[in-house]
Length: 217
Ligand code: ATP
Image (cartoon, rainbow, N blue to C red; front, side, top):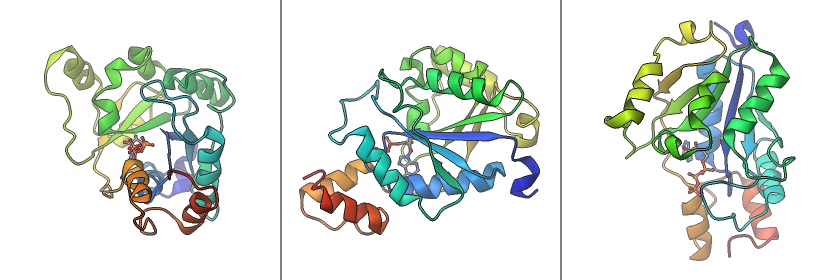
């Protein structure tokens, strides 16, 4: 099936993107292919609920994202969370996108396994599947929870069959085995602190932006 055959579906990939790196870009591109959709909407988190406020503003993180995807039609930057002056809860984001796209289109909210393992601490997490499917990408050293009520919740909604999932607008958890690159934003920030090269971790325009604005020093 080509991408145009099911471009009704919408996929969201959120993150702090502090800064954006090849791991994020590689995964988002692979997701567009895997889900057979035209583009993945990349949503920088303005005010993360679960971590300290990033040292770099949401506007600068968005600027770096825009630089990183400038020549990439499969990825679109979405400033939806920057428009809200409050904590960026994913449930609010999927509610807003669901309203925007209507009730019937499949909506995929893509997260890493590291995010799934702590999703039960997210605001109104049990309601997420009322609005979207969760596509969970495996990450090294991150196992799917296997015990407790949370593990049962995941198991109840797990679905392997993507064709079947696409017949529904929301309500499934799908695990996908897209190979992930061993890069993190933390590693980039640490490398800069110790004056190490980051050229292999993020696109050149982002490297230049970081230098020009003396970020993460
Ligand atoms: P930090 O090191 O600051 O925690 P991060 O590199 O994990 O950042 P985030 O912006 O927090 O990046 O992650 C956004 C999303 O991207 C999450 O769902 C996360 O699982 C995923 N992600 C992060 N790094 C990678 C990677 N190397 N490959 C694929 N996905 C990644």
